[in-house]
Every structure is written in structure tokens, then in C-alpha cells.
Length: 246
Image (cartoon, rainbow, N blue to C red; front, top):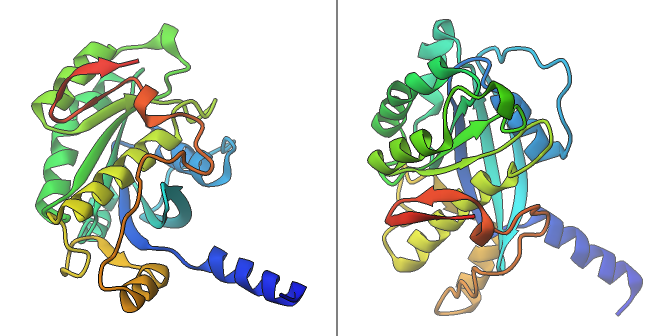
């Protein structure tokens, strides 16, 4: 095969994906949502971050097992004056990354309101991951891990702590949500072709469907391409699992 053909195949691979998933990043202002997202998409800390005005969009393609997944990431403002605008972006979201600041109890106290809005407006199969941000500031902690873990269990959401400054565990919530959604698709409980699911097939998956009578998901246990943690090692609480791994 000519070198040009190799380059063409590589370009096509980079531009194709199996699934497109819509995520929303929600929570009180000042919890570090934009910094968390910037660390995930750029692998660096966002210095001099300002409060988000309305909604900001970014994306990243990740790999889980044999699947390439493009994540549409909607970073929403946490200020009350933007609430009517930001809530319109909740519709059709497959996952919500719900962020609070472990050094700010008020940001934790108000989680129920954010969760209620997301579940009322997003996909009926919404996957929620609670993230306690700023884990690097342990000496300023106002919300204990055990308390947040209890809240997560009571509200049937995944939970972990992360640091947008150091990058610790930043990729885990996004990959954890994607894995949960993929498993729902594989089990047949979630249909990407259903309106409002927050998930759709990408060109790469559709080509396989057209060339085969069955879409094989393969193994979902492969290591993520840029992951800094293994999900099985993340200290987190997951719905249906009463214990924590660490």
C-alpha cells in the first residue's frame, strides 16, 4: 500500500467515532467546573479562570475498549441569573457531571436542586457522576468524603473526588459515565436511535452495522487511550455497589 493510502486511513480514523454522547457539567459557581473541563480536554490547568457566562462548548474523543466515543461537553454557568438559559441545554443530555467544591459547604448543600433540574430535563436514562473538586486542598476541606459518598448512595449517582489543579482523577468521571452508557446500550436498555437519549451512532459504528448483521461492542475493559487512572482503582461509590474501592 502506498504511503498516501496509509495517511488517508489514519486521517479517517481520527475523524470517525462509534458513538456521540452529550454531557452537561453543572453545579454552583466557583466550584471549578470550567477548570475541570479544561484539564480534561487540554491536560493542563486553566489559570485565571473567569465565571462562565451562559454556556461554553468543547469536545473530546475518548477510547473505551474497542469503542471510540466523541463527547459533546456543555459547561454551564453556575450563577442564578443564567439559570433560565443554561437549563435549556440540559435537554437530551446522556450524562451530567455534577460538581461541588470540597472546601465550600454551600456548594454541597445545594446539590439536590441541581440534580432535580437535571433529572427533570435531561434524558430519562441520565447517568450522573458527582465530583468533589479541589481534592488537593485537603486542609481547607468542609465536606468529608464519607458524607458525600452517603449523599451519592441516597441519590443513586456515581461519586469520586478530583483535582482540576493537579489533574488527579479528572478523566475518571467522564470515562465512568461513558462506560455506564455503553453498558446500557450493550444490554439493550438504552437505544441510541431513540430521540432524547443523548446518544447517537457515529459514522464508524454505522459502517459496521451496514456491513454486518450484528453490532459487536467487543471488550469494554480495555485501557483508555489517555486515562491517568484505571476505573477499577478509582475511590468512588457506584449505584448498586455498597462498598468503595481505593
